[in-house]
Image (tube, rainbow, N blue to C red; front, top):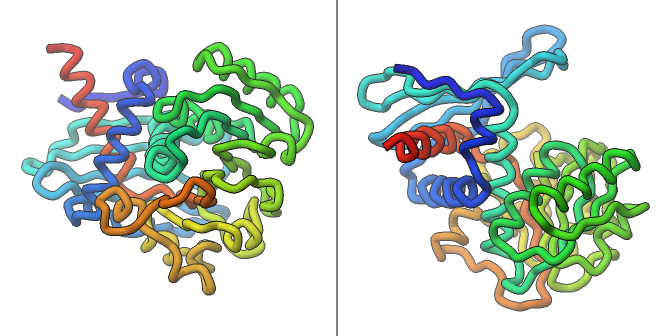
Amino acid sequence: MTLLFSDREVTAALDAGTTVDAMRDALRAAYAGRLVAPPRAAASLGGGRMVLTAGHLTGEWYGFRSYDTFGHPEAEQVVVLHDGRTGAVRAVAVGEELGSRRTGGLGGVAVDALARPDAATLGVIGSGRQAWTQVWAAAAVRPLREVTVYSRSAARREAFAARVRAELDVPARAVESARAAVRDRDLVVLATTSPTPVLDAANLRPGTHVNAVGFKQRDRAEFGTDLLDVADLLVTDSPAQASAYAPPMLAADPPYAHRLLDLGAVLAGAATGRTRADQISVFCSVGLAGTEVFLLDRLVAVGAAAAA
């Protein structure tokens, strides 16, 4: 029987700890070669694109995610999980929550692997779904003492801070500028759709860890090369995907490409992560393909365990 999950069911079943653990396992599997995850593919369909990402956990399952860029208000993402032995469809998730939580979970793994162990303050620029799941996941791996948030809409940033207080039980306040959001923070999240920089790297103190969500290309990024220049560590969840964009993701473009590390390699101990408290680390998330399917498989397992 094929299981169908809506956003409501995903939200009810997937907590932050489970999601971060699943993404940590996915990154390790990808680095070990067990999770086969080619860069995303896109089909131009006139007025927009249909985008596909796929993954195959060797000997267990395969599946894909599809979404479009037409901008329809009722458009939804679809994630499909197939049984690797029979080809049967085991589960389908429809909506935005699974993908958003996947991205947040990858950010949580990055915070856990790269940020200082004592990191406790977080500044976020952005107040949408992606910003929320980044903070949600970070709170699962670090005991946050305070969150500051800035976005262009005063009402949305106030609502975001209220949600952090209510759902995460973490003190939070909205601030009047991006500078105020990130100044003196241990952790910084960039989760906007701005095509121009909203962060000045000079406002980061030594030891800060930064999560940047989504691919950022030259002349189309919410941060500038000043952030990459000050970074002691540049890390991504998929170097192959980062360089497959046209043009490549900013951190995968010369002169930064040779410094860009694979987060899976850091987790495996094959690449060196943070070695000093004063290092600035930057995680450039592109959303490793196949991780949505990995998380859907974990969701099915959580449901099976709850029913047992």
